[in-house]
Image (cartoon, rainbow, N blue to C red; front, side, top):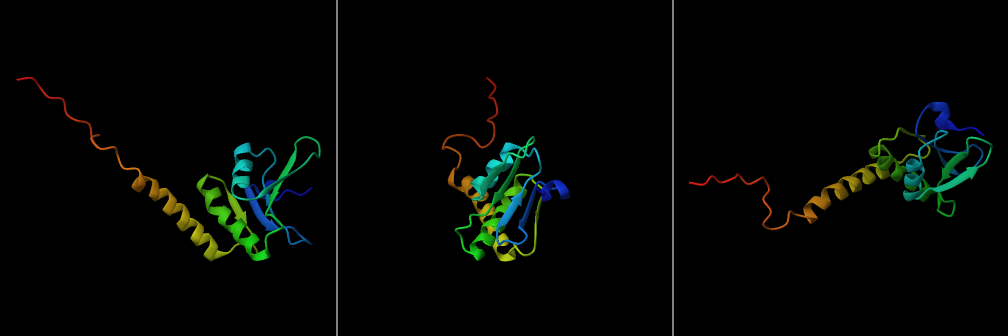
Length: 135
């Protein structure tokens, strides 16, 4: 089985599998479990094939989604993967610029929101108090 992530030296290769309409996300042989877990959290389905050692693992966008929604799901995954430090490549026939920009905006909004929602508890100084000297 061909693994484009191994071939191109990336962490994730997102593309439409030849002669199908299925969007694949290949990861390199021996990819960390955290990468596979993140792909699943982002909505991709995990597949395994015991072709001997090592195990061949790939992910696909759920086929029950329409073609446009499949592309949006794959594109929305990219900023989260990049933020986690992974090297990602996505073919132009899957990538949607507007969806990508919205996903980046959503991540930035979520990152900024916790600080605004959780201010420092009342009475706790924002900087260390100076020690007082006895007269």
